[in-house]
Length: 320
Image 1: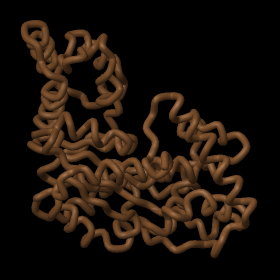
Image 2: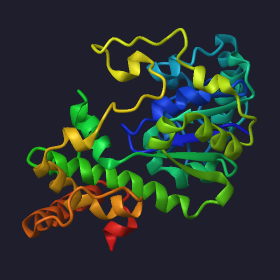
Image 3: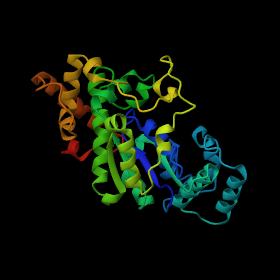
Image 4: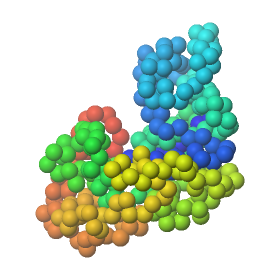
């Protein structure tokens, strides 16, 4: 049943590269960021408390630019609209139908989704589709923070983090840790055969072997077409952002050892050094100074209070 797989991870971790690799498989299509699946789930105007879709949801979605990018057959959507008007349809079945239509248009039976932010919604998604799989891409948080802080939409990433104006690096560390911990905590409740963690570094350094491991998890035959996704599309111009260059797996796009100043490295590790250690990443600072650790604890309290006040999930480790 579709959705077959969700590609998740902290944003700026390389999930677009993974999505393009997977989408090149002859049996699997992976949508690039629906984003709307969890957005409409709890809006009673579109989905009832019992999980039944209102006919107006499809009308609303057809106005969404990301939904429009799916380029679904208009007649098929009209048929779905008439179906919704005649009989109730659970939200999970509605989304499955959309994914099935996308797969039919691409000539593929299996369809997945890459929306990195769904790393915070794994429990919700699992309740809707108990057999869906999850690929969680992990990347060194220091490289992730460099990418996030340099992004022109950084304000959007760190919206709601009160520490952002005065402590951008600590904010990026807290943001990365929150995303990673929420994903891993939710995964602990899943059947083992539905969740797989992989490292961005492995995807870069040994792409063929890593793709073979992914195919094993997805129960698909390995295809070397996965590593040819960029052919005919690559543009090496350094003036373009990496996503628009359609590069193959490429080392050195970010390197915290070179790009992160010693004070900022200490700030990051004062916040998220424990998680770096848990994930097996080397520490750049043996022991952050006491004043840095004090500032990190204060920043975590501020962010935790703000996130909690907005009704958004906190990692269990933070609550403790």
